[in-house]
Image (cartoon, rainbow, N blue to C red; front, top):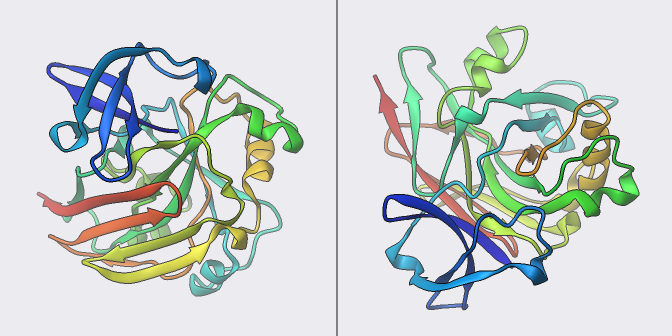
Length: 261
């Protein structure tokens, strides 16, 4: 089931994406978290997808990201493969939606890069989740771009500044609740040119392992987002570039880069 968050007049609603070509959005009552997918309630209102504005599919209390989770990417960055997941936080204010701009803060950084990633959306409050129970707390999956000011990331002793600018966490276009994350193709393009291509089978730590590892540290809330890491092929973005992250069975997240004075 594909669940989107969209602008509706002066308000915001969740809806289920229906169809395969002429897509529509079937509006839901309230939000879908904590509700079994078979028990979601519809308002009866339906809108052509082309006539609504999709928003970031969720507004998380926090985005917990994992770095160095593809061996080839670790090598291209010239760093050692870690013995355990490298975890960091992106602020909720970094989240932006499909079609929204990525703001390039040119006064503060000279190199902004894309990082296409699979994102995990948590569906219920949880802590200390065993690996074998991870599926029970996952609501669904979406596409993410862990946009990074690479020069600042390398300059600072930690990654908060380089990863934390407003708009540096595009998510979307919707959440897919019924996919298996173990072997999904991931492709990132810039202006139509393929820059990254891998599968989640290559993750050093798979999704259940990450849920267990992160939830042993902190309580996860419904709507929280876990970023699973990016494959090799990261590179720079420039003003006007269009960057897309496509993940098999989920969809495509597209954003355009705009210089911020």
